[in-house]
Length: 299
Image (cartoon, rainbow, N blue to C red):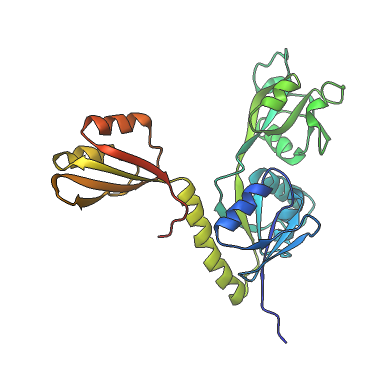
């Protein structure tokens, strides 16, 4: 009895990207059988397995070909690639797709009251960080010398207990920095989640699975960023109405039963549709203006 080839995807078991990754895969139609006790989850309706691991393990699993794909933050990916290059290990991968979640930045933060006068102010200081390779690259590119102490958690408390002068850590809202008396002074890396692929060629069966999955992921992301707009517009104002529509899509114009002076206008908007635009449309005589989310898109 032969076993059907299954595409293996590595994702974060728990943490910042875990929920968003699971939501993405489910919106792509994958039926996940996830258990907190199991590292390997099986997709019941497609030949796909999900390996649930620590974020820091994902780049290596993909680079070594243990997993075919991985969903990981660019910050973790870049740090791992730099570290593996330094150690002479395999560090090649394919960045298949940038994803529209997991946005954050890697920044240097100093205690409140620190007299920051530019990057040179950081020369010779010691930083607590989980990202020493990215910090070292930043320092080298800017002609300064820094020291670091490696911490995997609670980085923000390091200056307070005298372990470091400042920190280099992930920032999302800045609330954690403020709560610990720290001020962000320099952004050194901007990150989102990415779908990465092993550098090894996939066997045809696995490539076929990826060729089915990838358009679904792209469709989900495009739908998340888009809105479907419907409205009724005066027939003699179509040019002005079309000019106000966001995005590059050409509106669809449909007749209304029993009306010669008004038509229905439908369009997919890939840019933000502001209240001000709705008010301008209303001033042109448009009514029944609806802006709705889109669940899925293709093509």
